[in-house]
Image (cartoon, rainbow, N blue to C red; front, side):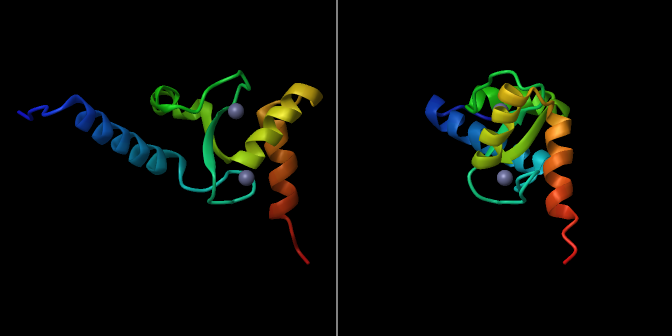
Length: 104
Ligand SMILES: [Zn+2]
Ligand SMILES: [Zn+2]
């Protein structure tokens, strides 16, 4: 049996675990531009969401509904959804194909 010394300590540990799990499941790389900086999670259905710890917990429960993006791509994805009416999959196929098929 583990003892809970202090709630704050437990919470910090818990947050660490969540972050580790997140990196395991979603990787440490932006799905679109492959950046490893300023990453966040995005909900694929495009509904407004937060990027806090509570959201992260929910994301880990349904990892297929979420994706790791950097801040810039994340903004871009929401922009496309809002103004162009694109779905997440459309956006990714548009953006990822372009950068992946870069034969010089
Ligand atoms: Zn990106
Ligand atoms: Zn988002």
